Amino acid sequence: MLVLGINALFHDPSAALVVDGRTVAAAEEERFSRRKHGKRPVPFSAWELPEQAAAWCLADAGVEPSDLDAVAYSFDPALARPADEMGLHDPWDHLRRTYAWAAPQFLATALPGLDPAAVRFVRHHVAHAASAGLAAPDRTSSVLVLDGRGEATSHLAGRYVDGRLEMLAGQALPHSLGLLYEDVTQHLGFLRSSDEYKVMAMASYGRPRFLDELREAVRTTGDGGFRTDPVDWGRLAKPLAPGEQWEADHADLAASVQVRLEEVLLELAGWLYEQTGDRTLTLAGGVALNCVANTRIFAESPFEQVWVQPAAGDAGTALGAALHVARTGGEDPEPMPGADLGRGWSDERIEAELRRAQVRYDRPADIAAEVAECLARNGIVAWFQGRSEYGPRALGHRSLLAHPGFQQNLERLNDVKGREQFRPVAPMVLAGRAGEIFGRGPVPSPYMLFVHDVDPGWRERIPAVVHVDGTARIQTVDPGQEPLVATMLERFEGLTGLPVVVNTSLNTAGRPMVDSPVDALECFGSAPVDLLAIGPFAVRRCPGGHA
Ligand SMILES: [Fe+2]
Image (cartoon, rainbow, N blue to C red; front, top):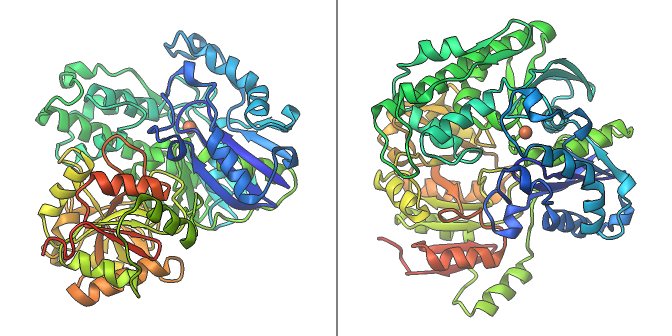
């Protein structure tokens, strides 16, 4: 059975292809269109489809639109209600329903040959749930979807038993943990539905001084749901304009919201465990990208294992919707094989692009050793290998790498990327060595969705990746899954004694992550990067780097 998944309605348009229950391709539209997040998250853009991502998924698998058994669209307009009935204030929200009803015709236009009758609407939070419960390694798990909003709800608590979803609770709008976090994001001068992770980073600088106010406004209801009453943010900290300098009050507000979110999520996870007694909890929805909260759920909830969908935001609903429709069509979906589900390029294609650009390049005998040497000399490396990542994190396929032993590399990378200086950069570490360096969070942690405490004995050795609160958001690298990245880390350890490298996403300010060789060359050309390691090839800016 051939099922194409489509996420288009709210944020981060994306497409995914599931063939006979196997996830073969998934990608976000932004990587093709080069427009961050693909589109604005507003009602009047709800018609926009992930046309290029969908066309690529099909072409990559040699599938024609007319071959598809189903197209799974991750929103069901039949479940939506007028915004004012749901307590939301959005005069244009009706456009979302209008465009969703028209999506089958729009899709048939975007993918000529597609039968509009093949389009299936999938409840938004069922799509999120399936992206966790059906994509995770365990066949039976409890699932929590923690989101901004779906058709008429903001969350789902349930359970997958042998691939079948049993829904146990769902919180009706306007109560929404995701929308609450978006509100405070906007109040702090950041872009809502985009910059929530900046609030999480800022929280580390503050004290949760407003926790009492937050505990009053945001609370669980004992039935698997919760309340989020409106908060007068301005009374706690004055609103910030974009780019305006923040002060202690703002960090304290961020810390208060963050801690209250963690407390509420722990209560929701505790309630779910009481219903199911499962060993594993799976998570999806935009709030599940909050790796600080995920770690508290892992460390403090009764669940033994926590698995988070790497594309936990709306991008992941393309995959979830496709897995759900495959499952209801009688398939038995396989767990997703990894997050590297996007475009990949043959050595020949890469070399053709290097020739076309007329840059000097060479083909070292061992690209991993070449990169390790450049990093050991404190150079910065753009690393372009294999298929691109599905979801917001660079996981060793489209990464910017640096030496973790120099404190100033945090500032240097934030400068390269045009990021705020309060934001941390993260380490990748050999899976077998993670336990001695990083504590509290789960190991392995291949998708960078948890934070770990850095062992005090290691903080001085890898200062660039230690956040102000002594934590790091690690990616563990398994040599079986990621042989080239693991070899690079081993070579780097051989030269420096450190099995850790700084890893941040390969992009510059305001741009989506690099996806194609041309994107990589454009990024390399405009940023102070010493070496571009693209497939087996090396493109150098200044031989020797910053020795
Ligand atoms: Fe969502």
